[in-house]
Every structure is written in C-alpha cells, then in structure tokens.
Image 1 (cartoon, one colour):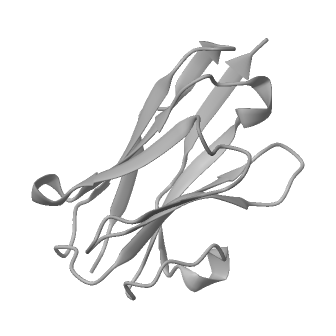
Image 2: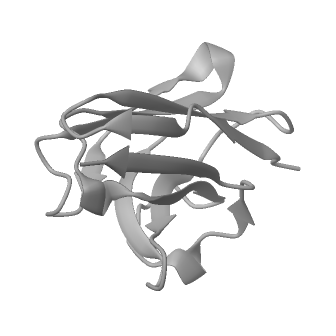
Length: 124
C-alpha cells in the first residue's frame, strides 16, 4: 500500500524558494504517476505538477511553469517540488498524490492516494 508523507512547507517572503518532498513509506513505486496539487484559502484544489514515474516526463500548470520543477528519486521513493520565485498567490496547502497508472492526469479525482498536505505561506 502506498503511504505518502509530505514535508518542506513553511513561511517565506516573495521571491524566495522552497523544496517540498513527498516520500512513499509503503509499497515501492512502480508503474505510478505522481503529482502535486494545492488548495489555497477559499479556493478549490488545483493541479500544480505531475510526473510519470517510469520515464520522468513532467507536467506543469501554466501558473507555475518556469518557476517550479518536479523531480523524483527512485532509490528514495521520493518526489520533490522545487519552488522558485514564490509569490503570495502560491500560498496554499500542497498535497502530493499517487495513482496506480503510469499515465499522468491533471484531475485530482484520478489520484487514489494522498498525503496529509504541507502548508506553504508566501508573504509580500
């Protein structure tokens, strides 16, 4: 069973960087896709980025493209989200998620397993 644990959130000023981590403490990831979603206060959960675990192909939302980078470490069963040039509108709870299909989607309902979330707050 896949169990996801996020870490790395915090409070930073605009323009700063943070790196989020998502570690699978359960079954070894194989043919999975994993992604990052976020929920800002008063808003619905939205897609941020995703990665095909097998070939490493990455996907980004338009709002983070060029600023955020998703990556994975197969040996550590860990996915990362490097966030640069953070802006106040990036403030949200960030969740990692996994689906037991290698094909990436941007729809939250396609992901079966979720972490507990980590809060990122960006002050202006």
